[in-house]
Length: 170
Image (cartoon, rainbow, N blue to C red; front, side):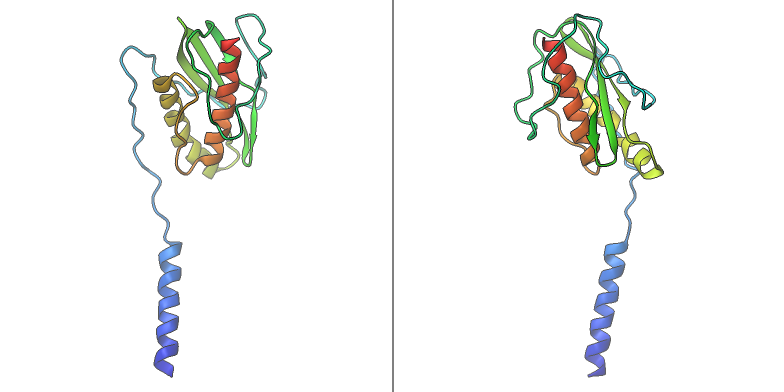
């Protein structure tokens, strides 16, 4: 009977140790920016971002993407200028994206606001934001993949990006 109890306790201890092991998050971030495109930049986050800054006439387009993220707007025929998407609330804080359009193409994307309240937020977003910016520049739309481990930031980024693209389409 003692052997069975010790076997069960050893198995439980092994499972606890296995599931409590923390893997490293220091993966390399790919920088697949084509030479013809401007390098993506990430702005320093701040909480006093303007909800809509545009160098073109004011747009009255929808300020949010569909909840499922399906059917993002195509970027053909975008109006040149700088467009700031509406801030999107996430579980960890607001996310807001600004795009710059030149020649009908997105040439720069900046995350002007994103969660930075604690070291974990900063660690996640330090890796996620550059990946999201790179994907946006490559896709030229809001049809991009989420970053694993940064689901809330990715969803907020996507919603705000779609809002900025909607303004540029108006």
